[in-house]
Amino acid sequence: MSPSNPQAPKILLIRRDNIGDLVCTTPLISALRLRYPRAHIAALVNTYNRQALEGHPDVDAVYAYAKAKHRLPGQSRAAIYRDKLLLLLKLRAQRFDYVLLAAPHPGASALLLARWIAPAHIAGYAEPTGSVDLTLPHSTEDALHEVEQVFRLAKLFGIESAPGKLSMAVDAAARERVSAALRPRDPVRKLIALHISARKPSQRWPAERFAELMHALGQEADFLLLWSPGAADHPQHPGDDAKAQAIMDAAGSLPLLAYPTQELKDLAAALSLADTVICSDGGAMHIAAALGKPVLCFFGDSDAGRWHPWGVPYRLLQPESRNAADISLAAALQALRELRLES
Image 1 (tube, helix red, strand yellow):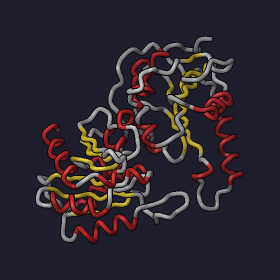
Image 2 (cartoon, one colour):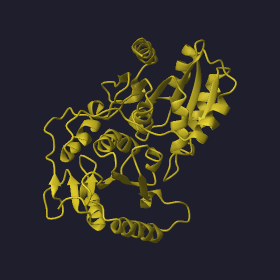
Image 3 (cartoon, rainbow, N blue to C red):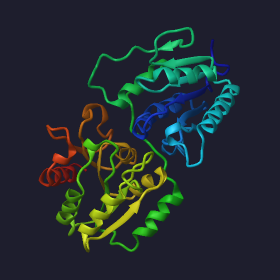
């Protein structure tokens, strides 16, 4: 079965996992737009990661549903499931030509969503069945980056190029808020963004180490301190208010703007203004790469080959212990010096 208009197919990508995973899918989206300039390209994501795609120039529509673990206060599980069903029915009525399972391992639940939407074709890394008629075998190359793994799906659409850079739109109002908060500052001095939050404990660089780094660099740069706000013991959205306060207390009179980012668009806006980003492996790191920023990143117990910053100058530190807390100040300063020479 061919699309009703082969030059302008209706394509829906499903990517419902973490922020960084979705950002790593943007080279595929941009390649599809280049291949089909007149296509309708949409994405089905979740409410947690949707702002990573909102406003993206290559995406016509972003649809999102809330996972039960991300539900808002007072929002029942029943309401979550009802809204999800209504969204799937809405998507089904659009009669997509392709639903693309845009992940190396999409899982049975993503395939179930695709079947509910009932496109002409379901494409992706899935076992061939009556419902998945465009499939690609998994790569046997273990060293592929997540971007490369996902981008292999472009072959299903006749795209043979290499993946390009990550991309992300920046909300203009959010960027102006950060710019206003930074005024006045000397534009000659470099602005270093320090993102201190990390979901996995092994990825977290200690507060005292961030403070020591700022003191070592305080004569040559201004600092933008970024973190996920809230208490560390919040059951759904743990935050780093206490860690941020410890860094602020230790910073003393250093030129520091503390800027908690409640929403993803606030984080992207803040990172877009930085000259260099220092962070742990995670969503913020991939957003920084999507914004073209040089990155110094701390890796703990994660796969550096698969998840390192894509398409930008970077230095990656990962100790043998695979615990970011064991990365020394000296190692961070040396890596930052090397990064400056490269970028």
